Image (tube, rainbow, N blue to C red; front, side, top):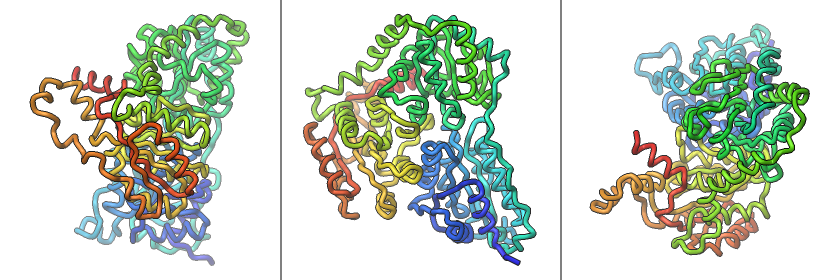
Length: 567
């Protein structure tokens, strides 16, 4: 009769759930699970900080469309990943976080790493549970996956005390779930589909918004583009750009670049898997027209009507709901030929994008405009790395990067969400590469770079191809710039507080020498593309430390300063 440890039972169930890799940091409380993963053929990526493991698991899910998994040791190992779990929760990312725990025999007795991590994880996860019996481990793991992907996706925490991990059982005595998770689509109520179709069919200025949950609800997704084309309906995604490219290559489908500005004048708005959070002004005007009739499609009934009233609320999978609407609309009206609304959307988009497009040819700003820097990176990628992941890290740097690139496929572009979780770039690069094997271009600020810079060693160890471009304004740029906008008179008298400043053009590029990479400090625009060529030709992980202007805020930073001042 085969004897298995609790750790091996966990690994076996992970395998049954389709897990191919996990992200972890070594720790005594979890080693039996790690050994089990090795024996089950599950790749274990070991990082230098648990938060990075959480970011990597998050990115893996965003890119692959499947849950990501991280494993952390007890106490500080678990709490170190709290920020990554908060990011995953508000980005609607299904992540399974398995944490170690102190043995129950010494629980609450001052033993090593005995922190109340269960309550800690309840604050940042969709659900947090503790399994006290090795016999039940497969069921707990199975349930964690069900909860993570159901309704609004999100992270689930499962804590396993050390005595449970190390317990040994006869394999035949353990009940193992075999078919405990369905992946079936949810079809919308035909009466609600009919009502929504009639609203869209007669709309003069329709706009579609694609939200985070659509990434995991995309079967029949081809009907999203068909619906947009049929009604000449501009589309935009929420601020999590991993859903850009989900239903259409943005380069070849102009409508998917026209929706954000057009939403302010829409008369009907179709939301697919949308979380009306603060980046969408909670679904309110002026970002979304306050008088527009809203049709919301979501698998989670609780998200319909959240922050914005729904004229029609349809509980359905996003791709399926789009398909049902399209099929009804076809019978109601012919395909729209009139281009007037599209022309208006183009004009609104051009006006909204003007600060970004103007910066692309800026030759006057000294040091160089950060918008010009990110546009040079875009041009290089367009020629040399069209399928590379684009990771938008840093406060102001992320905004310029996001709006100066297009997405060709889902998960190509990755960025932090509504929590402003800067510093996630290295973990995102690892998780994205683990999901699809594509290189990464990480664009970050000099502040964000410092959070997890030692993870360069992790990327080197796993031979993850990445170029890191640092937009160096020698400050915590988004905060410094917003302070300049909010308090110009105070700062003219007293200057910036040192807390917002960093060493001038600190030579971060020299860190690449530790791992025999290529690092370059740049000060002129014309140096960027040749430098990227050099790094790519070297076949090594590289850093470009690029000096950018210290006083050129993005439109989003200007908005942030205004909102903060008003509050």
